[in-house]
Image (cartoon, rainbow, N blue to C red):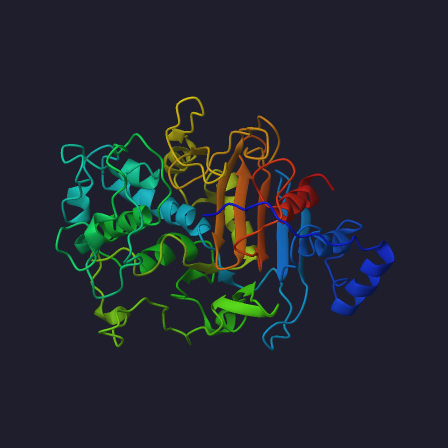
Length: 446
C-alpha cells in the first residue's frame, strides 16, 4: 500500500485573511450548511500541508452511531489538465485497496453458503494446485489468502492480463510464472508470515467465480451493489454513463508542478470495462473471458469505482452489522469473520511486514488497528483504541479510507487526491500522512 517518507519541504503558514481570500477565489465557501464553522478553512489546510506539496482535492464524511452526520465536505485546490469541475462527494474515482474489503463482503458469504472450508486447501476451489515451492506439503488456504498470510507476492507479470489463465503464474513454465517471484522467501512458511499482496484477492475472486459460475463484476453487482441501489462497479463495469461522466482522475504533480493524470483521465463509454490486455491480443474484451480463469481481470484488489457518498453508504451498512433499511445485505457471521483478527504483528518476534506501521492487525479482507502509539504506530483513532475496522487505499495519487467503529457505530470515509509517492508529510501521532490525520481530526475532534 504505502508508507510516507518524512518530508524535507517547508512553507510559511497562511493567515486567516489569506485563507479567506484564497478560499473565496476557489469557491470553497459553498459547503453544506450544517458543516461546522471553519470547515472550509480546515479543508484548505489539508490541501496545503505546511511540510509538503499541495494536494489536488479532498473529501470526508463522518457520522455518529445514530447516523447523524458530523461532517460532509469536499474541496478542490486548483483546476487541472483543463478540468473545471470541482471535486465533490458525488464524483466517482478509483478507491484502491478499499476494494479488497468490499470484495470480501461478497466472497466470504458466498464461500460460507457453499460450505467452503476456509482452513482447507484452496487448490480445488481455484481449479489448479497452489503450493509454495519451498513448502510443497503445506496447503495454502482461503483464510490465508484473505488475511495476506499465504506466502504469495505480486509477480513481474502483475496484473495477469485477460486471455491468460492465472494458474500460469504459479505453474513452472507458465507464461506468467516469472521465475517463481510470485512466491515469497522460503523462510516465510505459508500461514506464519503477513505480507500484503494484491494477488491474494485475485485468487479469492477466482474462487468466487468458480463457486458461483458468474463473472466477478456481475456477482458483485447482484449480491451487493444492486441491493444497496449503488451505481458503482469494478473497472467501471455496470456503471452508468452519467456517473462515468463525473469521474475524477487520479493525479500527481509532475516535475514541472503540473497535475499529471495517472488513472481515469479517459473513461471508457458505457457499458465498456477497463481491462489489462496482452500486447499480442489487444482486441480481447469481457465477452472473451470465461469465469474462473483469471481473478485479476476485474481488479478485485483495487479497481472499484465509486464516490464518497457511495463509500458512506457502505460504511453505514458495515456499522449496522450488515443491514440496510431493514434488510440483511452482508450476513452477520461473514461480517464478524471479517472483523476478527486473523493476524497480529508481534514486535518482539516479528511475524510480518507492517508497511511502516500501517498494518499491525488484519482480519479477513479487513484492517483491525490496535491503537499502538508513536510515529510508526496505528493509533489512527486514539491510543489503545481497538474498536475500529475498515481499510485504507493508496494508489496513483489517491489516498482513501473506509472505517467504522464496532462499539459505537461511528463511521468515517475520506479521499485525498494528488498525494506524492515520496516525501509525504508525516502525521504527528501515527504512521498516517499529515493530511489524513487532519481529516480525522476534522471529523471527530472538531
